[in-house]
Length: 346
Image (cartoon, rainbow, N blue to C red):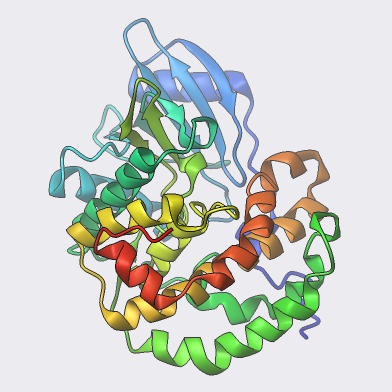
């Protein structure tokens, strides 16, 4: 157990940046030539606004000043790359400044303008197999688009990255007690198992740049066409990691405790049809899903305790993670193999 007062690092420790509304509007008008009405959006570590002009809508994103400039560049270049590699993917389009720069550096952080993605957050829509299928297909397409992308900042350490799960040991006491019985003993035992069995096997698998946060709050869909995603948001957790870790993150939000395979099977089938999984990846998937659920609970609990005024937003995924732990542990590689091939066991 470390005595470091900030074991999770600055980006997880600091609140979102601040900027006077008038100054924000002036910067956007001066450098992008746009005026309109601003609406602040919820965000865990950045300051985001929706800008509505007379003809279009945009996202104005001010990155946390603790975020190194190379990380902001990494995320921005990935968006530019994905738009070229797969133009039909519904990723936000980077809008350059009047002088052609994708990022405007200012005292409060890095300011960017992105095209607005329409739709309703998937978290607020009925969860259906069709929507799960669309999620799996979109993730596979984005992963394929990013396979040819590289950047000097891709190998930064991100605590949300499942392969970094052992680094969360100092934060185990942050597990929210109000989500049920004490989870710390089970989390500690699983962490030991992860270090001894999962991590060595995972290290043998190839890595690439991945989105790393394909959760329902970062995905948009049209309620009238829920089988197609209209937006893939928040590239702030991008990192070079294993593809199966990226998939496990998406899977962790698709497990219904009452019927674990109801949504998970179509997501896996769609992903596997675009990017076939190996036996080694499938064997690790249940443990990686469990690790992501514990990661969500640990980091969210730790941040919510630090910033109680933003606790509701920070803890938005914690109840589903807590409810899904037992269901994730019950999954077997045989079931997941069948799901990948399109058979949905009852």
